[in-house]
Length: 173
Image 1 (cartoon, rainbow, N blue to C red):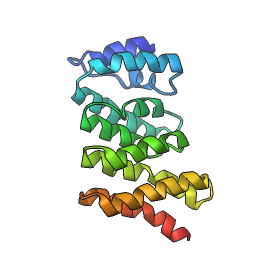
Image 2 (image 1 turned 135 degrees about the vertical axis):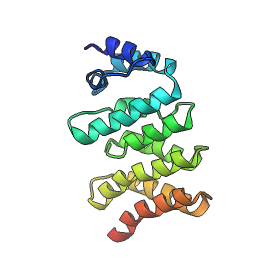
Image 3 (image 1 turned 90 degrees about the vertical axis):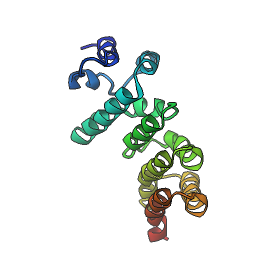
Image 4 (image 1 turned 60 degrees about the vertical axis):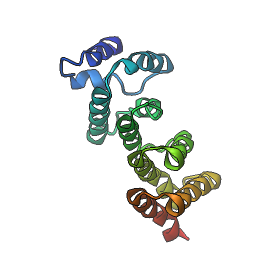
């Protein structure tokens, strides 16, 4: 199945999509990502969430799959649930380029669920910092953002997630 056919299948919301079609979304090139971004807005928020949830499940089942480009491109979606699913999908990503977008979501997204998911996804980087596998400036950014969320976010779940993650830093030093 080609990416084009897969995207066509995804956009037909009257039919269930095939897992084999979703596999086409792994490891997208820049041109393929542009093709994805062109087709994605045509999907309903419900369909988008279903796709992102399934992509996350596929990642858990097969570590060789990489849907991070899809998840990253959905971080700015207009729908809270889509942004939340995309943020959750990045929980195992260790590419430092997503630190800033996750921090932006943690500190400024209007949805508490998205902010909580961002705190959780930053946990990967907190763990990397504890292991000495993250630049100090990135570790400081992550820690500062988590501490700011603990101090200023009024949502209990956001605070809980941030506390859980910031504990990585506290156990290290």
